[in-house]
Amino acid sequence: MNDVDRGTRNEKTAIRPFHLNIPDAELGEMRKRIKATRWPERETVTDESQGVRLAMMQDLARSWATDYDWRKVESRLNALQQFVTEIDGLEIHFIHARSNHESALPLVVTHGWPGSIVHNLKIIDPLTNPTAHGGSASDAFHVVIPSMPGYGFSAKPTTRGWDPARMARAWVVLMKRLGYTRFVAQGGDWGAIVTDVMATQGHPELIGIHSNMPGAVPPEVSKAIANGGSAPADLSGEEHVQFEKLKDLFAKGVYYAYEMATRPQTLYGIADSPVGLAAWLIDLGDGDAKPAAALSAALRTPREGQLWDQLTRDDVLDNITLFWLTNTGISSARLYWENKFPFFDFKSVTIPVAVSVFPGEFYQTPRGVGRNELIPNSYTTTRLREAGTFRPGNSQSSFQKSFARDSDRCAHSTCRCPLRNTKRQESAGTTWWLRGILGHGLTPCDHPPRGS
Image (cartoon, rainbow, N blue to C red; front, side, top):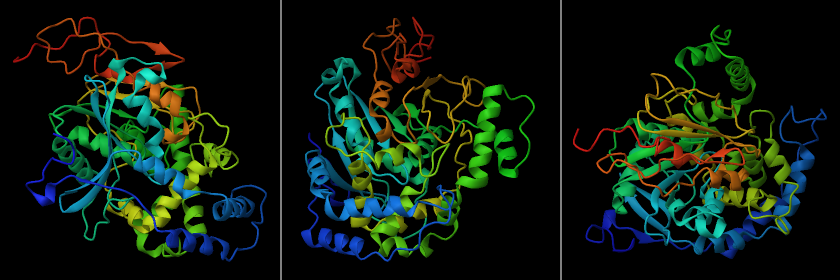
């Protein structure tokens, strides 16, 4: 049974094909508005301390209005299998990329803000077709990438309640509707919170998660950060560094989030001006700079002549343009208003967890965190050498490596361990996450037999 066949007996749960074709008139109107931007005066400083600099925005606007071609990313999206289906009263758009490898493991990937499905396009082929990227057939995944409610081509909620917990439940419904009875999940930024929360909801189909922005801050540390207090005395040197980084972030770097968490509807300007929207989406820092260092570098990098995993100006504009064409600047911001979960705190996950630590993330999860009573199951941390912020699009090759898995089966024939691997492999400083969390790095594994 294929995707289109599923649920056809119930129109509300039917999975329907989705094809994208933005009218030329909408693209023309966008370019017209970009060119008609009324610019403010130049900032009075020589750095980014007052926000995104005028020269950067004017250069981006020139390129956006004259050189940028939306049809390229539209063609890439239409080359993939895209669908929509109604879940919990809302139409959800998603990409479903099935691998040709029979043993592929189903994976649901959730994007963040200011992100979208286009941030995940570059990881699809390495995950579904690993043999073309130096991997083996046993490294393959069936990849499902939904657009969060209020983002991209998913519907915009018209009532309250679409928080990370509701999204997590919706994703489980989606995976089961696609016929998957066991799967894993990955997320960064908001996607990390959705994934963490999903792992606390007791879904038996979810057998492991991976995050590149984990909820890994202990409650007492989070309280000290929120109150502007001193670091707990028992922190290690590495933990103390990350404590100060998060403390600085919450003191200086998250006012964009406070605005969306308290007054998202007030942001009318980002629905009216493409340049205003672009500046709002760009002025998001990583752990060390605003705008994020990788993003600033990308805006200086043309797509032509670059390696496939290089973040370029067109990649940035693909995402911004998607926000503009779908008018989701404000609807996406409401997620901050809806959310009641802490961003970085532990969330009592009890299934296997793996984390990829990027140098350019908001904070770098300290080694050994999670190996305590707060996360009592397997927890593997991968420290990546390539820079990146909070999303896979910044460091595709390392991110892809963190998704590989081994084909060796557990030595216990009666083991209820959901997966096969009993080994752990390092490559260029990367621990391949499913080898660690799903095989637990044990030979043989220490899981009890089925039925125990």
